[in-house]
Image 1 (cartoon, one colour):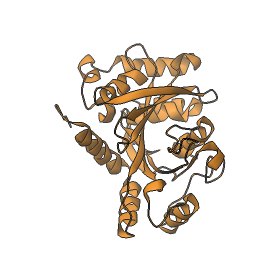
Image 2 (cartoon, one colour; image 1 turned 180 degrees about the horizontal axis):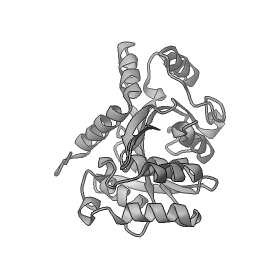
Image 3 (cartoon, one colour; image 1 turned 30 degrees about the vertical axis):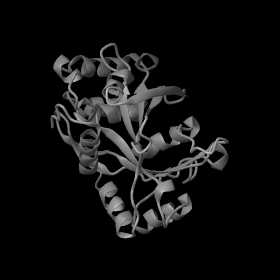
Image 4 (cartoon, rainbow, N blue to C red; image 1 turned 60 degrees about the horizontal axis):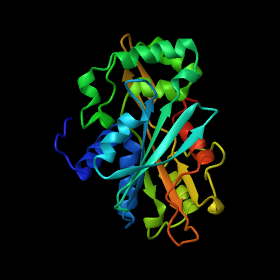
Length: 269
């Protein structure tokens, strides 16, 4: 899995390969767009992590900063107890990177105990690997621990089950030639047989927000725990349409209220 000396393009490709392995729907939807004559450009990639003294958002972000990305303003998710930043590259054709972290100290002692054990077990050598952002799960986990985490935070249970890897990639609707609106994209995806995240409506955000988003519900993968295997929601595919700001440039940021609902694409129910 190592890609020492890799450049940004090879890192992004390796992340895509890992993501599609867990999310077969994304590969099939991507190929369906291409078969329709579309060029699929990736708007952003999302990563999840845990705030901890030896880990966190900046730990994942430093790999991208070394490759020309710049950390932008934060987003707060009070209900889900998350903080996020997105990263932008000087080359606007490169996808944005959206990294969120679980604010561990805001959760119950039980949840903190489980996640602290997991993070403390990560070998120090793993933390500096250039492929850490798609390393996967670097710890052992019992199914009872996963289920206990899920009771309190779906986000926490997802990170515990899957570790460090892309949570979703995103089709830039702005770059589609034939399906240039989000309703058209949504109908196309549903026509392929995939279910969309309907939390807060299929389309999150509006033209006045400068960003509209939709997403599929996550695929399911069989995850091996220390005592048994269980099906766990894995990753999903997102679709984003950006609108121009007063200066004519497309809005580059994110809308916290919309992202809050997009997070629910990995919910178990």
